[in-house]
Image (tube, rainbow, N blue to C red):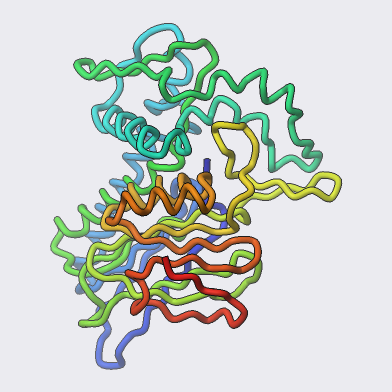
Length: 336
């Protein structure tokens, strides 16, 4: 579904001149840049950020589909033949993914990995797959064909050739666990930012943390958003991985129900108190399109959204009205 390659969000840190206790440390992990920002003394910051990075590394080693020894890689190799025993965290994340699939009527589906190999965006000779090729593999994309074994805990597939990818949810979980590690080490305020998807905690010397949403078609900030304690934001955009074939633009967010890129929005951001929800719902709402998204939001008042379409209309939750400063001049805001 998504794997961030460029930053969808930019963290803005404004330091009062009388303070010198903000520490920012960055590492490349999970295929992106992880930025940890903490307000702490130097010694405590070093230990806390190391603990947070260790949590991210641990989760990546469990849930990455690119690491040969991970739970997900073992599932993809063997679950068509037998139930594969996995770490309980991996099991619970897969279980939660299936629940989100139910809630979103299949707009979120981790079995999209069964057809993702057909869309080779990195190839210099990119050619989009044909309808016939998609249909040949499409039957493999169905989250209902994942069988859960809670007592092992384990996972099995109903069909040979099925695969799963947790790229649309594991990053949110990594953010959650890294933030937990920071708090357990005594850090009272900061940001865990994984390639632009992030969660804040505490305040910036009494003020809200600020984050900037990038314009989906320009290298400039679209708006600035204040985030309160424990708020998380994640963004899905049609600009993160793109290939062009015969003048036609193809992006990486695939509708698991069709096997083809969605034609809905240019950018969707979800704000909630849970980075797993923000991560998975950003992709889900992007796939749904405007009409279904509005219906979904009526049932899920716990989240807020910023949805930008191809005509630069921004559909923004009214709950964000006093928390946003719009920088884009030509935007047409529709409060929902």
